[in-house]
Image (cartoon, rainbow, N blue to C red; front, side):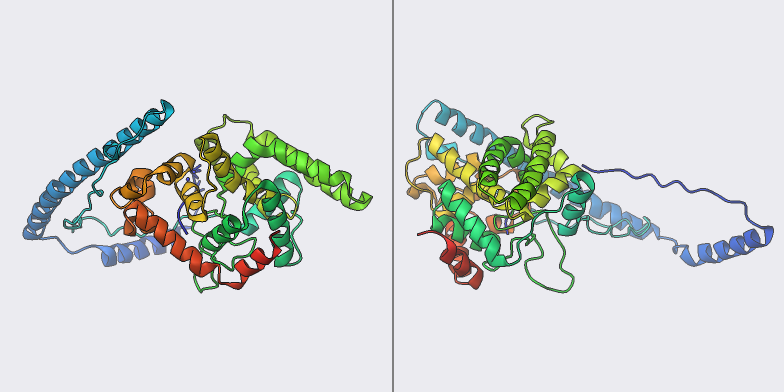
Length: 400
């Protein structure tokens, strides 16, 4: 899974010291002396420290040169991107030199030496990522709401296929991207890192569902397309029997409250990321699990990319791999690849379409380091995943 953007809360622990008996203090002092004696490090020789300083100086020299080259490279990437977008806005043709044509610098020097006199650093635990149980708990705590979850996987696939087809997604687009993003057999509640039932597996991001929406995606979609979702849900409610209508109207009321929260900040990705990490934002993400709302969210993410291309005057239907490029790198960068002449694709590095940190965390883009190989690798994965039963089931439910 590729990849695809956070509040940090500092927690201060207050320790209250209680009066202790003299005997206990005597015992504790003795124990402390023993522990201190056991933990005292042996003296570090002058020769060892001198060797460390020589190694550190060499490392700083080599690593510093690498950092300078990398900074210059990624500055050039950003500058060229601005130039391309400005030229397109003026309807000016691009030339291949509007891209950086070299690969990013790779550090091949020695690792940073360890200070022998420094205390041994403990490896911090991996950061905790909210999971489905957290999303559901937030929905209940913040909105007193439990998503209407499907009784079977086929039920969710059927709802998704109907919504996606009605929105104008082609079967080829929906099924191949489902295969790529959700591993071909992923359930409606599949989360990144937990695609397979392996011991020790843990969530690596909040990416969720058939199209692996991040929590920030859910907040952004609710902010930007919430009115559209309400219109669809309200039209559906009007045709339901009273009991079902009442249930859907409760969902509609919650969606309306979520829209208000999502729109409480400017329409900006960074602002939506902040909201996504708050309890109300996690509750919005839980809507991906709802049989009425989830297909709307999952579909809209892809539809936004298709609409983006249409607004830019792109006539042909986007192939699934091209649509995935927009899903992977953002609409602007992905569309930049879509428009690229075939003859350039073997020359232009994929780094042109990423931020530095995103590229550093995307081994697929690093391995397939020019546009033609990245698109081909994406197609190859899709070719394999659509042979799995989950993808076949979705394809069979999609209207012809």
